[in-house]
Length: 156
Image (cartoon, rainbow, N blue to C red; front, side):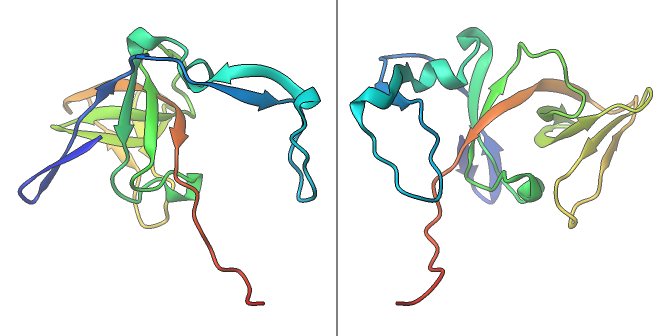
């Protein structure tokens, strides 16, 4: 989540806690660009969003994205990232890292001994992590939640 302090923006990590369960119907049918009938005989099971997005509640955090460095991957400012610190495979994953005093989200790449943090926007450059940098991998972004966009695509 984001908190503002004067002109400076700070990230505030919210620990994943399950206070109560919200059970929702989960339909086995896929939704195509056609007619969909949510009949009860198509319900596969009841699911809880916590079960869907949290693999390990003790190592999972929620944090809101700031900036536009990952927009080509679909991660926009204001989206809520679910970050899991227990995931140990980083290569090619979108990660949250601590680098020289700030949290950064990028795609992790380590072709050799040097870590490269790749943006998903042509307006940002890769970050090459040097051995002298204050660098720590915080966790892997396992999911993100976004608000659906309303778009006027044609006039009637």
